[in-house]
Amino acid sequence: RISWLPVYTEAPSEGLLWPDEKAISGFAPATRVRMIDDQWLVSASCFLLNAEVHGRRLRECLGFTDKIPPKVLTTQLLGYSSQLRQLKEKSMEKELTLTREKLVLHLPRLYGLLNGYVVHNSERSREDIEIITTNLGSRPSVWLGEDFVVPSSVALSVGLDARPYLHTAPASMRAFRALLRTLGVRECFRPFDYAEVLDIMHQEFLTSSLPESHTTLAVSIAQYLYDHSTSLSNPPYLPSQSNVLTLATKMYYNDAPWLHDGKKRVCVKETISHAVADRLGVRSLRKDLLRSSASGLNESLGLDSESFGQRESLTQRLKNILSLYAEGPGTLFEFVQNADDAGATRVTFVLDVENYPDAALIAPSMRRAQGPALCVYNDATFTERDLVAISRIGQGSKMENVAKTGRFGLGFNSCYHFTDIPSFVSGDSLVIFDPHLDYLPDASARDPGLLVHFGPGRADVREAFPDQFRPYLLFGCDLRKNFNGTLFRFPLRTAEAAARSGIKSTPCTPDAILNLFSAFQAPARMCLLFLRSVVRVEAKVRLPDGS
Image (cartoon, rainbow, N blue to C red):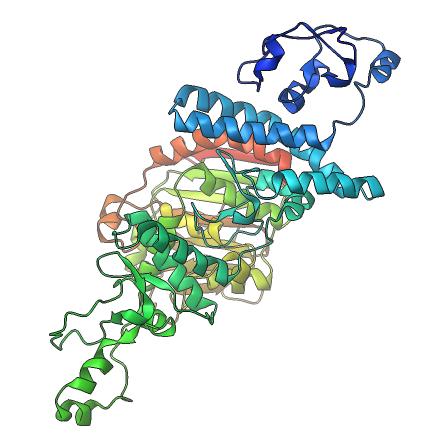
């Protein structure tokens, strides 16, 4: 207990946690001292040695090689959480940016040590786990890249983006699965959790109109509850046409726009389809009006007559999905993550700036897809299950999530930031999606896409439509034999296409893709540390001469 070891009286690194007591004396007892190498793990509760110790036996004797106790580690983590919160409250943007940069570098080691305590199976480890869960379980202790949140608001699996209420653990945190699960992080959120978000939003805003972002979230949660056939014990709150959260059973969906509503009933938000509203307890305006109207209408239509409700379009569904997922380098990372899940070792992004010939196409309307495109290649091949899963994304009556679509959820949906007509070739299959039903011949709401099989014994698609399939002749793909890899092609949305797009009204230029490549460079290097199979990520530009 004698204070005899020389220690720092000022923080040796900018942004380091540094309690006031450390400025009192220049010496401290060995039991409360750690070496400078551990500064980002212990500075909130331990002193830092202001000297060098070269001898291994001396370091062991002084306890510098002992495991850092979980109480020290949890104190440090909560200190970072508190520090970040205070900087945000004071709007200290410069210090906030610096602190976040430091945390990105040093938190993995801290979480790794805590995860080690959870994984280690012994009598002592149970005591350590109790310390960890007691200190962190109900406090903001899970790092999301920019802030800390409580574990109960986080899930490991990607689902509906319900921020700022529910969060998905970033890929960099999934390496600490044992720790996160022990703290209370979910494997995935249940429909009930999303319904609870609507209750929380109602308590927050009461009779005030929701901001646009919250309205979009509420609509998406309603769709999610419908897609999962959720049976709720109480009716949920849904946004009205004036964006006020109201009990579903106190609203109507307007399935009778041709009839006059003299009572001015409260109607549910028009972006919530009639089928969704009906399932969640919203009343049919048509049926309600028929009950109180002339008997002639009852006799001619009947309460059990066919509904006049309309289906929400696929493009509107995709537009709603895009509104939840920010455009940026994260869209590229999702393709890397999908490739890693498939066991690929290489991912290459290519900006193909060539304007391809447009005479021999499967339809004249496909000329709009022959310009510059973003291509994404990986050396893994689609399985039959992958083909079925990806074809269901955003289609039919379901807003698909990753639990439904396997590997292809957010990553593939993100492509609609760039294009209106995504496509890919893998194995012996080439698939083109046309959610607008405006490019492919005979595209319909039932079949908004085209699947082409090629290879020995099948018609030569290149010979029949050479201009159409020329853009896919990259990375050894010849559309005549099985292609051992996967190549996505996303023709960039032109200004003309953006003006008529039902998904996104912003064009995507080659310069925008180049800027995206630049923004992705640093995160790409970092993400390689946490991938299981991908060892190489490239970004290239293919010029019109093929170089």
